[in-house]
Length: 379
Ligand code: 0T9
Image 1 (cartoon, rainbow, N blue to C red):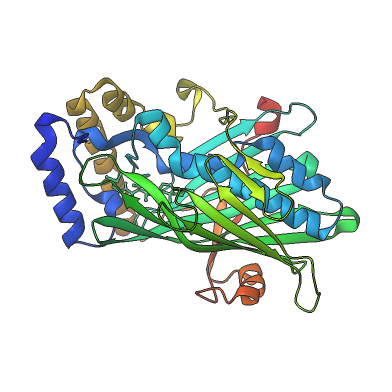
Image 2 (cartoon, protein in one colour):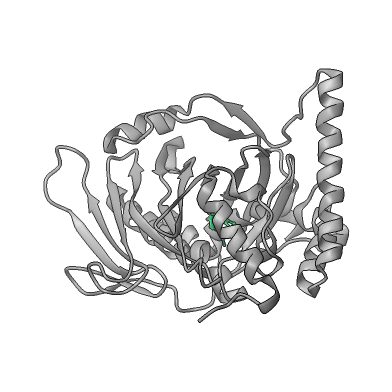
């Protein structure tokens, strides 16, 4: 099984070798055409809300434990979109477009069956290294998710190992002005299938969801050949606040299909039904910094197999970026973020991360300024 097109075999081998010998920012490396995706990384935060009804359902919880269960259920149900959707839509994992500083992505999931409207604001807050900040809100349900993402990649045993940097905080508004927070850590990934030119992701090690109520989900990821013999396997353990006895529950199965409550056998997550992609304005109607308009000509080139046009248009964007950085340096100014403010320390991460001994013990944060476009009325 070799998915590398005849004319690109040597450039693919060359590309893999250069990954192997150089660990660092893969996003800026030039890859052979067949592995290019026409989608920018700024679109990826939309994966968090492609099951809007599961997100909204967090607001319907009866108590703290029930809320922690619903948050876990929503989280597990996003993994299929996050980590296998390129394989489904394009046949394999592909190299996304590397966002430029200031790139934006806006979207909405309209209200339906009284789940409320949810809105998405994404901004590329750093180019080198690439860092993407996002905010998702369902105002009617009092839910918001704020986070940022970066990656540290290494090469080992023929696979790319991706350590995700950054974290997400889910905030739930409770009656009486009380807020409950959930610190969500991000799993480590391994990209396999490289030699055959058909990369795919497997999740490894653990990730955590720590609630300010004290409930903690520990999610353990395994691939083929481990505890179930199937790929995309996980086991999640939900434990009560320190000092509270009993009440531990476990869930296991495949994050890309079905999982069950270990004790009762009841279905926990089922992502075999279609997901709901975010609604985005037509590229022609977008602002020039919005992802699909900014990358429009490059994306068209990639889709049409016209890689000469794609690479010419990509160079235009990169040259424009270089000129902007030179102008800023000459004027002694720096690029101003539009929707987020960077802070060196996230007090919520620090407070909640202590429960599970988060590494590192402190992280920075990009605080959303609540100045996104009026996406709710557009919907
Ligand atoms: C956050 C997600 C992340 C972004 C992507 C590693 C990766 C960039 C980051 C972690 C999302 O919530 C989830 C899914 C997929 C991740 C990407 C997969 C991938 O391959 C890229 C890297 C930078 C590459 O493009 C590697 C080269 C390529 C030839 C392998 C397909």
